[in-house]
Length: 525
Ligand code: N0T
Image (cartoon, rainbow, N blue to C red; front, side, top):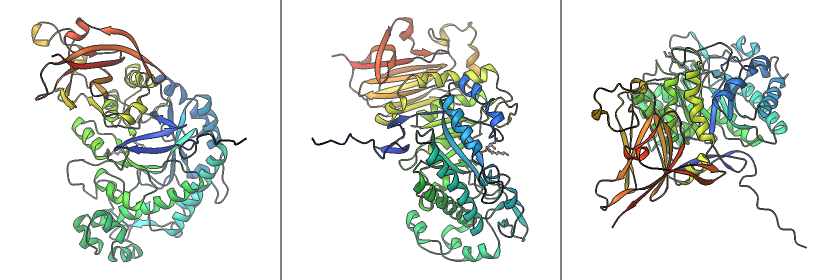
């Protein structure tokens, strides 16, 4: 008899980014997957400190660990590879039921070369540092170093080969070649060889992609030429790693950015010139088509800046992911803002118990309140098929802005308003003498909403009140028909109770129990 082939999963089983209608999903084991992540501290990439990672990740309900593999640890002597930590990480992640986002700390880590092996660090002739304008060495490897690229790439490919051969089950779901690339205080390499390239024409691929006329770097980019040049060449270098890496195993790959001021004109001396900041994503897209997306590392506490950064990386051609965000409690609310823009993942940085804290970027310490701020949200999201919902439907999210003001949106015929800092009953001005809740003055609160059909919404959140109403100008008679609290059995919504009375009269309030709510809107005639 004829054997019919079983329908193959798209692109085999390998994780990949899928895009439809401008929305993105990270597909893992054939289904959309939401990265509820945590990144370990920089030096936790050894067997011993891993024991201090899992309890913290379990405590916050993470499903994914972001962990570095250092070039110095993989290839301590040239051509002699040591995969023992890679294997330990795979074994332990599986044992602790975590997926892995693998971070390749190669030629560039926060721009510097500290993670390269000694034989790279100490051989500046073979692996040249950038030159400053006055001919001094700058402590960042030049992206024009052909030997640097060849050696870095060889090590990266050895890593990818090991993953291909030892991770058929795709514990590793995403790879980040290099970390926060670019160069601080030296916008590009000013060596004679680099200068020669800089004086030449801008590659046509780039001018075409940017829809600019051809010319030299200076004529095309003016006073941003140095940065554009270093961005292009850094991205080309990473493209070489990514494209060759994907030929071995086509895992999705991304780059992360140390961010500047998202509103001001970036100062090429102050920010990591060459990195994938929001204003140069187009250069990265043209130079590095094998990179699936660029991503923001958020260590800026100002809500206005955070929202703008998130917006800059939310594009039809760029899946939003937050691979690093400060692990202080106040950053946790931005989880809602990220998911509301369709983020495929989120990961506070420094999530282990090795005793290191990167305050003032993140937390002073991981106390219970801090861990709960992330855990509470992760547990709510882990209980829902959110990645699938957000791939199939429009979503919106709100995090409490610094000024505490309400925020709203309109989805179809309905306007949704998120407000913050209230008790659950009634309105503040009814009880002028009642004290305010503790969270009224805290940077806490937010929600995420999916419009699952024209008149139906799913949402969860914390320290927030949501009001649903007919949008201005829509037909009369619009109202909330039903509010259900429920849970999911795989993809199916199961109603547990109907909310009514106090639970709905003053808006839909979620404080410290972020349950799932389904709202059905309608119109009376
Ligand atoms: C991040 C992390 C780690 C004057 C910082 C942020 C991680 C890297 N870098 O803990 O090092 O590996 O991606 C740099 C932010 C610099 C802000 C300086 C303000």
